[in-house]
Amino acid sequence: MNMRIGVYPGTFDPITNGHADIILRAVKIVDRLIVGVARNAGKGPLFETDERVEIVKSELKHLDVAAAKRIEVRPFDNLLMHFAVEVGASMIIRGLRAVSDFEYEFQMAGMNNRLNPKVETVFLMASDKYQFISSRFVKEIGQLGGDVSPFVSERVAKRLAQRFASEAKGAAQTATAKRAPRVAS
Ligand code: ADP
Image (cartoon, rainbow, N blue to C red; front, side):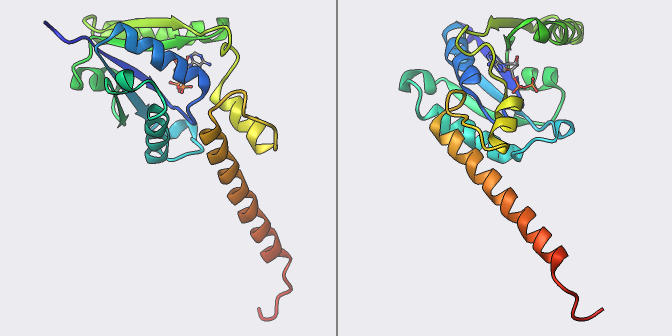
């Protein structure tokens, strides 16, 4: 029997409870799920690709063991459709939140279909509990010292806190260096 392989691509900067929910549901409809972490340098991600991959991998360890066994996390840098073909996927899985996602996802699915009609895009509706969660707002809230624990796992929340603490430290050091009197010039 042919194995049904699906790719769930995204930036995952960082992985939220919404992403984790889609992963858990996607794995019910495929035999094997590849979580594709896009390098996506254009989006100016907070975490490096390797870090995002590692964070997703460590989240998988906390999922149901049988499901986790069928999931693989891989970075990718090329065209999504090429990546999908490379891993032998017959479907691309995307999560769909409110109306705002629709236009972009609709275009992307349409263009991907033109690129390769053999690979179907499948949308999973975001669960009502996670509907409003986005990595972007999680980062904004975290950076301003807000509580991100309702949106991400405690491990991801810790990572974010560490990252923002080290950024703040770096900024403070730069400010001190700027303020330091010049002894020589
Ligand atoms: P991208 O840059 O490809 O949009 P994201 O990491 O932001 O990467 O999102 C990856 C996928 O997960 C997208 O299909 C997005 O719609 C979906 N997604 C993001 N957040 C949620 C959420 N809270 N619930 C369901 N799906 C989500």
